[in-house]
Length: 321
Image (cartoon, rainbow, N blue to C red; front, top):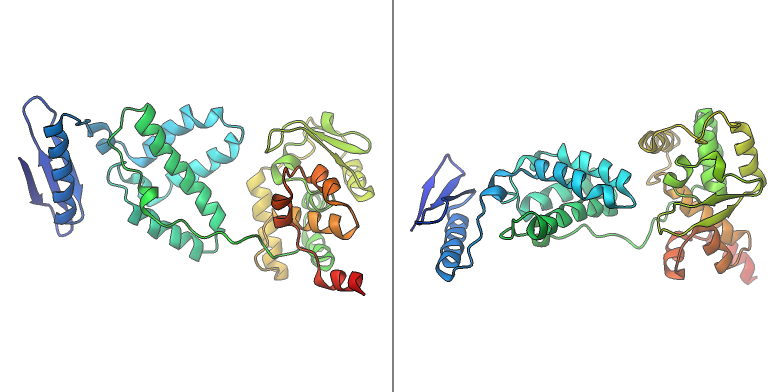
């Protein structure tokens, strides 16, 4: 038989003890939640489908994220980026809740606050995807089969079809005027090649050839060659070859500096990835065909590519006559 007692103004502890089973204890915000949980556990005990919740009840999300980072993340292609997201999640207050105590309401509140602060909805969704997958792993591989996934009990932030922000030539000129020399080179290379931040900042000299960059490790797992414009070749010539890597700067540092530059010149809504959007739009405006742009950018489908292309209406009108 379950016993429920009040603990403080906003906590109710449900306890279930049955001969042959470890005691099951969990704390809730309301008495109704405690009663529902207790009824579910007692039904499982009666049906013989009970699974012990003790580990899930004592493991915080932060601890689970650290385990996930050790066991799951290293096997992924984008492990560096996921590790950064995990470290950020661990710092969030809700990460101190146990896996059973964390609710969809907690994640909904955090998600709404992140979007309100100006974080891109897709960035928030990617972090929530890590939490969701963690719960799947916990159920299937960590013997926590009784866990409910709180991400399934919330509404994910809505992602728009694509950013409309362009880094136009006059914006680029103002950015380069205030950027430090290394960031000037990175910004220029991003606009001239359409390469991702990770591709630029992980670039090694052995992959740089006279007229193209050979990328063996890309987001979609396929190698590709990126042709180098005159401006791009000039940037690489300025760098020389002092080290194995072309740029020795942390990706987050590059993104933060770019955001500061954008704020300084009043370019609202732009992020480092906007440079890739701009590059693709300029490729089309220079007259490159769809398949040519896909070969440079590495997009697999035309639908993916069109999300990145924001052609100037004035240019389109001029073509119509």
